[in-house]
Image (cartoon, protein in one colour):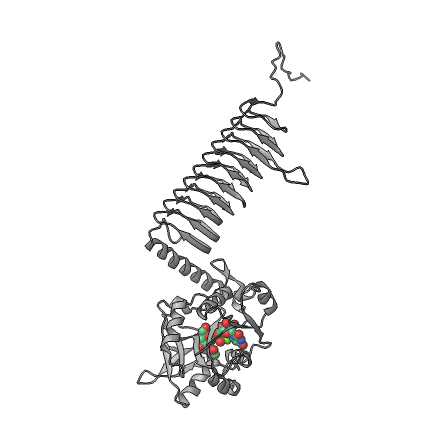
Length: 456
Ligand code: UD1
Ligand code: CA
């Protein structure tokens, strides 16, 4: 039976106390709603889900415009039943409808697949969970045969009903034809004067429609986010879960409570990740690497046996086997390091190719450069790549030795095996094999008197 997925996301999220709509707050570097859209899209064989949006909806829609989805507005937030009703005109009667929530970000595809597989096509399927503290959520009422009879909202429940610990996740699977019959007839005769989607359970019971229920592996999969405390809790759950998965694959994570992935990572075996490393975007790391503490890696490709020392910031770089980087290195987009190259402390590199075995170990800026093999770039060397209008390239041949505190005024080429004397300002090409030096002659002045303080 064909599936339509609908994500309810029109609620305001007052308890976030935020200018930003709740579903745009980030978990693991992605908007809450983006997690749900991505899951729904993958689950349903790349069929875009329908999103019911409302509060600050235009901003939500604009922010997530890059994702495949159909957007339908719910202009007044009259309850979950009313929200789902807005999607029905676009859904064929023969479909099943899976309802997801924009503020429940971590439901796994496996759990949803299980719901689809275990719910008979003419039945209703719901995901429930038993929570130590069910406060605020709808409770699942069952009869003596353990059949679900009703879902009661906390605000409408009496003390006995509130003592029930099994809650409604809100995630449900319902034949579209039944929704089309039931939803237009919902009443809002309850404490919140809302049209409750959950009231369809009573309809199903009356019409003898089977209600199937299942529970996720971890209850965090169905937790919704209402405030920033819950957001932080689920963030930690997500990171812990991912860290454990990686550790089981053979990666050492020195402290899984100080591990933050805000994107997608692939990490090879026997690599060690020290504390407070932040991964952003797409990060791929090979085998036997060590990533030092307080390092930020954004959209980086790192090969095998690479050592990144503490406090380095690496963005948009490609790093080959056996490189050593940091501490306090900054690699910016377009940096490509060949095998066995070394980048030391307080070195900034952008848009440059560094050849195999080359060393830039101290206090340098290398921009828009092509550096050959086995080059030694002395401390404090700077490429002057910008003339105030245009950027120019610096080319350094294999085996060149650049003395400390050299300024290379681009465009400029340094030949193979060239030596540049320390302190030079090089603004013309320097030939291969020779020593080029460009600095004032040293003089000494005999009998020079230091000035003395005048008596007043
Ligand atoms: C709902 C369920 C409750 C369940 C809980 C799980 C109902 C009546 N109750 O509670 O049983 O335990 O979810 O989190 O369904 N939304 C809209 N439009 C609206 C109202 C809500 O799009 O008019 C969206 C919200 O953005 C949110 C979701 O629906 O993503 C749930 O709304 P929320 O108010 O958080 O949940 P409750 O209605 O309190
Ligand atoms: Ca509500």
